[in-house]
Amino acid sequence: MSDSPGQAIRHLRARRDEQRLDETRREHDEAEPAPPPAPMAPPAGGTISPERDTAGTLARLKRAKRGNLDQEKPDDPR
Image 1 (cartoon, rainbow, N blue to C red):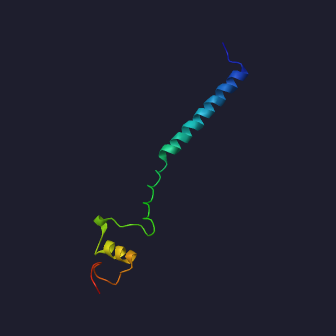
Image 2: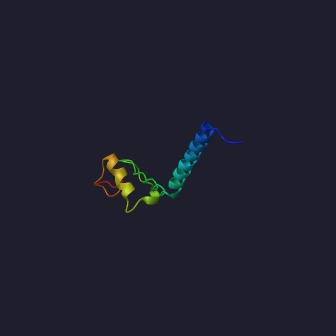
């Protein structure tokens, strides 16, 4: 039993589509993975956690907020 010309054409088109799909999958698998997302920058004027506080930065920021930046300690009467 032989295929009709229409069936043969459909078969060839289906085969071509499968090959294209396989090629696309192969290209996708071989592609380099996307780089990891960049770390988010801290918000402008954000807070500093005490664990990351170096040399009293957190204390200076708190004093600046209260308006007594020139004082070494907040309770220092100058």
